[in-house]
Length: 260
Image (cartoon, rainbow, N blue to C red):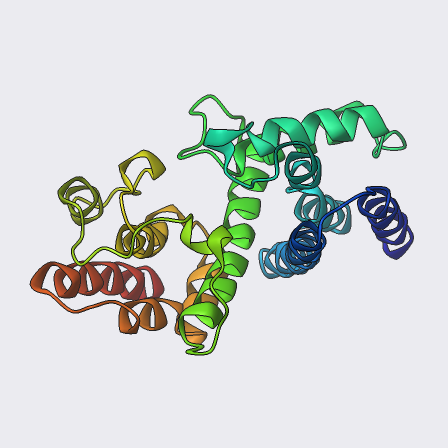
């Protein structure tokens, strides 16, 4: 297992380092995505072990985590943005990159297709209903690992009063003093907030709170509560009746998941 993971790390680093002519901001964002990829890979491996998956499955989880955002580097180089709506779907682009670079040629076809399918699903609003059980398991696993690390990054940002403005986290949206009606309706009915409904930075935070509805595994909920991610997001929000109601709803949802 360690040997195959070592090879994956080498291939990943070589690919990221192959980009030249980057601006200072692009270099910084490459480093952010590179570090995110390694953390997500570690989280995916941790979740796999907590779920008592076998060694081969744990290895696949790590590979999916490491390469889930591999399309981001080409996206940033060619379009100078991480905004899929203004460029391309970074998951689909990542699949193209993996195929072009033949990263997993030593694996059997079924394993490669499982990896690609999980990567394809990691950034979608919801999973395809027709996914077979094994593919669904890994798609859920990478979605949990990815969101857990994003929550870590954004809560570090929200709780640091001296943090430099980061448009990759705020999407260059206006700050906004209230939650948009469409956004509040979605989260209060227990649904994920869609990116298309976002109109301001406060909506982004509500969307991040709504991710609780998309977490799948007990270990993910436990880590979320241990790190106080929901609390940190809530504490960074201007208080209103709807914000308080939203926070109570998502917190009760998570608490019920942990006592079930």
